[in-house]
Amino acid sequence: MAVQVDALINSVGEHLDMSGGTVSNAILEAAGYDIQEELVRVASTCDVQSGSVFVTDGYGLNCTHVLHAVCSSQRDGSSVQVLDPVCERLYTV
Image (cartoon, rainbow, N blue to C red; front, side, top):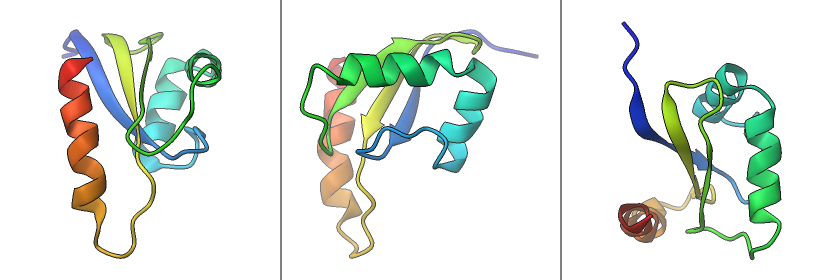
């Protein structure tokens, strides 16, 4: 049974390539390439950095929007410091 939701939250690297991560790639495959094109277009007017959040249409997904949170890969254990401001920003979108 499919459930319709207002938004999905997706994490993406600063390069905005949705094909790189497991979840992002699954979203890309389900929604179609238009979501990747819109993400790049929306982000092209901003400074893309860790903590940025960009909103796209849901396309073929069972949601109205996808919120793409830019998160850089943290291998030094500092992911909590990176994710805390991202989560705070998601609550205000």
